[in-house]
Each structure stands twice: as structure tokens, then as C-alpha cells.
Length: 375
View 1: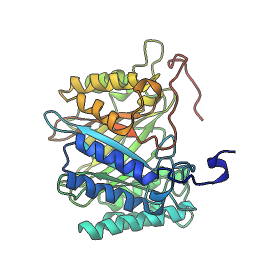
View 2 (view 1 turned 30 degrees about the horizontal axis):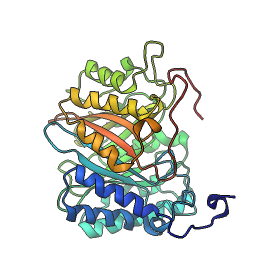
View 3 (view 1 turned 90 degrees about the vertical axis):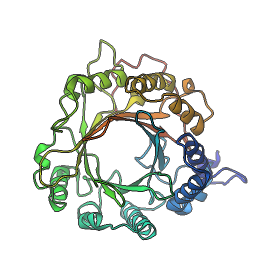
View 4 (view 1 turned 45 degrees about the vertical axis):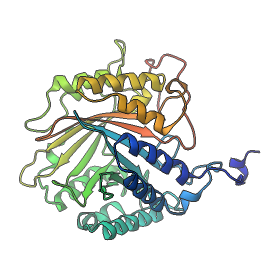
């Protein structure tokens, strides 16, 4: 029997906090953060994980979190812009050690409130939605995630991700509509494109120039042509530009038109309560399900970055900061590629990086373009 099945802790085994904070430190150097800022954020990471940070990695994940494929409750991302170092972001599940989804949400909420006290911001928008997204008997697959944009100075920008299906998947649309209404976006829901579901609603909290409410829409079997028509910004990105990104990131080939495995996601950001139109649009492509290995995913990401005038070498260094394995030896290190548009700003490309604390998905041997059913 293995330590994972017996629950035996191997003396000297690395911990979840040690691994992920080490990854954060190395990624912080790639993003140009100071040593002092990196140490501050490493402590924020381990503090936010709580007792789970001290959990040895020879034990299984604390919960089967939806945040990553191997159930690591931490994910990194780098947001690229022209002529600038990438911005490093951290996504984590503060309640990942809880024994129930309701407890998970309570721990996560307290973690956000502790951050608010530390960095002096209000949780008012989140408090206004608490009954919608953190009910007494919540449904899965998540309760609350926290994202931190790690800025110079040691004070991050904070985002909270919530589950519109908390009161049942059949009520997701009504939950999103009510949330937007409570936050003053009375006409926003009607402007959203049609999709297959609403996996997330996100709130900007704290020091944002224009705090956003972000609605994510799932799109099963999404094609490039459909993707090009998803933006509701006015003015917004050209359909041809969105289609080009879709084709470059997914690289489906001539025989497959749509995302037949993991679906694509669109994100619509609302900042102005006087208009129904969103001010931002992002398309997320789950590149890990459409590449044989991370070498292919990296090549696609580099091509997208160069097309938009961004530094692809920083992404190569970022992969080396997360793992010492070769990209060709697994698939999923680059989980998503995203192209983001926000009014008044140049487009951004974001690469989402898996920590792989518990497992590495093996590379795909057979041709990835043959449709495979997803459970």
C-alpha cells in the first residue's frame, strides 16, 4: 500500500505551501517583482491556505477541488501586455481543507474579510450577494475562490469567484440576473450571449480603477465563427481577430470545427451601471484539452503573444519557474489561453499555469483531433 492509501506521512516530505510558495517566488522574479514583494505574497499564499499549507504532498489533495485537474487548490496566471513585464496573478481556494461545501464557503468568506481588514477595502458588493452564492445548503462544484493580482508594493488587487449554481444548476441564470440587478446593472443580463451555462460570477474588490462584475458563460462545441460573435462590447474587438485567436490557440485542424472536449468560456465585464453593454470581453480556450503535450501548447501561446507584440520568452521562463519537467512530458501545465479586451486599453493575453502539485497529466499518444467524450 502507498502512503496515499494509508495516510502515512513521510518524514521530510515537501508540503503544499512550500511547493506553491516556491513557485510563486520564482514566478515573481519573472514578473519583475521585488524580493520583498515576493516574500510578502508568498506569506499571503500560505496564510490563505491555512493548515492545508503544512499538508505533506505524499498525502492526497485535501479535497477534490474543481480549481485544477489534479486538485491542487492553487493556480497561477500571467497577463501579458505589449512593452511591459507580465502581471502575475494567483488563484486559490481558501476553504480547500474544509469537510463540507458550506464550511468551505465560510472559511473562504472569512479569508476575504481578513484581507479586507489588512488592505482596507470594503466587502460590500460581496456581502450584498452572500445569500445568493453562499446559501445554507450549497450545491457544487465550488463555493468561493480568491484571485490576487500581485502588484509592486505588496498590496494586491483582489477578485472573488462565486458559483451561480449554488442554489442548483437550474437556477444559475436567475442567480446571475439577480446578482447583476443588486449591483446596479439592471439591464446587463439581457446583453449576455447565449451559452450552455454560467460557471462563475466574479467581483473586483479593493483598489481597482473601475471595479468590475464579471459573468462567465460556458459554450459547448464552440466554433471559431461562433466565438467571433460572442463579444457584446460597443465598440468591441473584430470578429476576425477573435476567430484568429481561437484558431491559433485551439489548432483544431481541418476535420474538427468546434471544442468537442472541454468547452470554451466567454467572460463579460460590467463597470458602468448606466448602460447594458459590458466594457470588457475575454475568450478562454482550454488549450490543455486540444494539444498532445505542453510543447505544442507553448508553441501556440508563443505565436499568439508574438502576434500581439508581446514577449514570449517570459512565458518560457515562467514554465521553468513552475516545474523542471520538459513541456513534452505532460499536458496541462498551460491550462488556458485567454485574449482579453477592455475599453480604452490594449488587448491582453493571459496564460494560466497549473501548479501540478499532485499529478502531471501524461502526454496524449493518439491524435487529439479525434472527438472524445468528456465526463
